[in-house]
Amino acid sequence: MEMASRQSVVDSSIDPDLDEQSLRQGAPWRGQWPVIRVVALGGAIGASARYGVGLLWPLAPVAFPWTTLAVNAVGCAVIGVFMVVITQVWDAPRLVRSFFGTGVLGGFTTFSTYAVDIQRLVNGGRAGVGLAYLGLTLLAALAGVWAGASVTRRVVGGRAGR
Image (cartoon, rainbow, N blue to C red; front, side, top):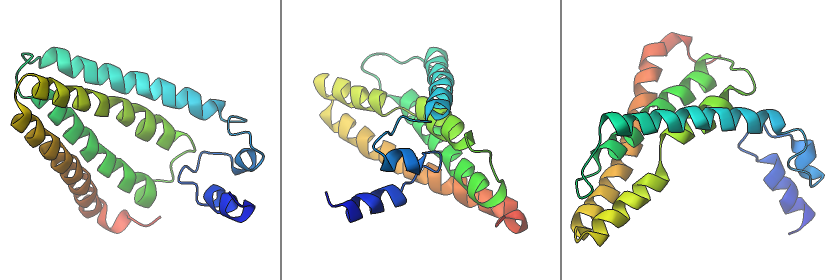
């Protein structure tokens, strides 16, 4: 990779918490321990919350995975709300996005369980249901982000645009 294209990758980083100087010097971990810690803490909180929802709303092994679908849809709606709030309303402290967005919401929403649910349905002879679940989850996640962001923009109205 040429230096110019490598530089453009560094300059177009989507995570503002990353230290670009460390990335340029080839040391992506240097100075990142605060980010790693808050993502890990947030992830533990989000994954624990997801596990708790599964305990409160258990399903039979061959049942449609409504719990995972609901968790992912709700988590995506919260992501939509959160992104509007931190980009248009609140000048969030440096590690908030990493803690809540990547950590808590990343731990709460679950692609791995979604994939296992699809495999379980297919292996259980319910490939059509697995395919429907695959598509329904995608639509619910996209609709959740859109609805969360849209409603939040309407609610904050005049306060948006720091």
